[in-house]
Amino acid sequence: MRCWQHGPILRIRTPAKLNLFLDIHARRPDGFHELETLMVRVGLFDTLRFEEEDSEASHLRIVDSGERIDPLRSSPMPELPADGNNLILRAVQALQDFTGENRTTRITLEKKIPVASGMAGGSSNAAATLVALNHLWQLGLSRDDLFEIGAGLGSDVNFFLSGANAAVCRGRGEIIEPVAVPADLSFVIVRPHTGLSTAEVFRHCRPSETIRPARPLVEALQAGRIGRAGTLLFNALQRPAETINPEIRALRKRFASLPVTAHQMTGSGTAYFGLCSNRKLARRIAARLNSENLGRVFVA
Ligand code: C5P
Image 1 (cartoon, rainbow, N blue to C red):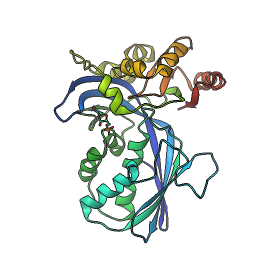
Image 2 (image 1 turned 135 degrees about the horizontal axis):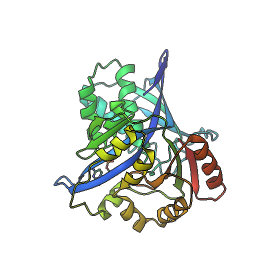
Image 3 (image 1 turned 90 degrees about the vertical axis):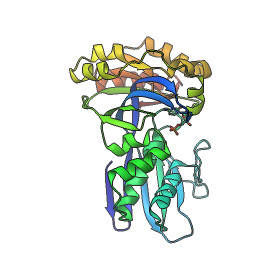
């Protein structure tokens, strides 16, 4: 994750991810599901700004990227609280618990990654918070320390901590095997009007009896066989998500009539993406979808 420091202020860009493959194997005694997923970082970013603050507690303010700042509200998004439930402040707390550090910080989050979309904006923000404060407060935590704290915050946090552009993730998602895939994949992404809770989607899923590996998809991507890769895209959470949220079914039908190589939901939804043969095509499709009131449309 790229960060810039000017005196006491540190800024860091935090990327989103898409799941090109996600299979669920079994529900574990701890309530999490054993899974195998291929995650890729995509060029859609939030920005976090950290500043030293001498106060009782750390503070977070959220700014909707591109919107005007309302100085009276700490979050312009009702579904994204700026209180202690936010993963950013939970990451600060976890870091303090781990190290005994008691300095505080003022954080501004400029939010662009849609929330409750399966693009792991919250996990990415949490990973960035750990990296930024380790640097700003000169805590000297190792990669393994950060991974340990990250895994306690959420299943996707370690993917972002790893710095990998793409990885096959296993366990509950926190065991990372970085893989090389072409960096120039183009996606058109729609986040419909409503979001979904990850826990609710997992509650509705039925784990596979036979284990599907992500490896054939990784190999197809590495060989540049994008058409073949398209046939291997998979997300076991899509069917349960479609039963809970009709917007996803509608997006599947809409994408089926578009000239994309393949399409599916990412993570636990609700964002839905099409893999495109090139960026120009992704932009053209995005322009068309933008006029259809399906939700927010992105090219990444
Ligand atoms: O780890 P994270 O906070 O993203 O998980 C949110 C919820 O999603 C968990 O509380 C759990 O219900 C579900 N989950 C799961 N198996 C996973 C990851 C998440 O059941 N591997």
